[in-house]
Image (cartoon, rainbow, N blue to C red; front, side):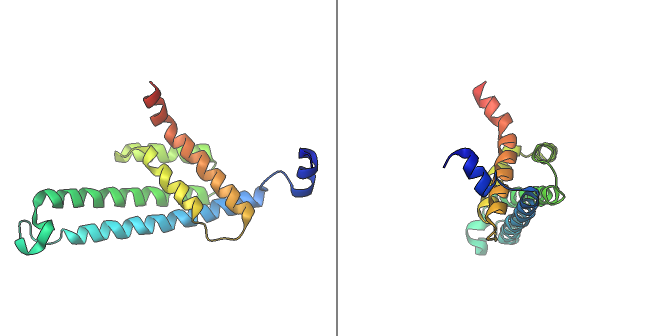
Length: 160
């Protein structure tokens, strides 16, 4: 079967509705990823809620460990917020280039590296709760496109 016969029989890829479904599914998966990060931030915050230097707090009685846990909690909360924003942009039908640009600008404004969002985008694309194959393909393509755009500045710096 040559390429023309294959395209005639099966189409040339996801259609317009598949892209919309893929974006919606990816937005939903990003919300789930954000929820996990938010729960992690809350748990880390709770772990250091005890009085500093209180020996009954075990390993968290050390101020250096508390700072580390608080920093990790802040990073998780920030990443959760950025992933929720990514989901909102995708769910609204944003183009990958525009979504990546807005996410990069938001991340930089918050002091985060835009490239740190790429793994979460890819993970979200792999965790879709749908049996719609075309939507899965579209979501994976969207996640890959956005991830590539977010990683481009970091790759350019490494190559320089």
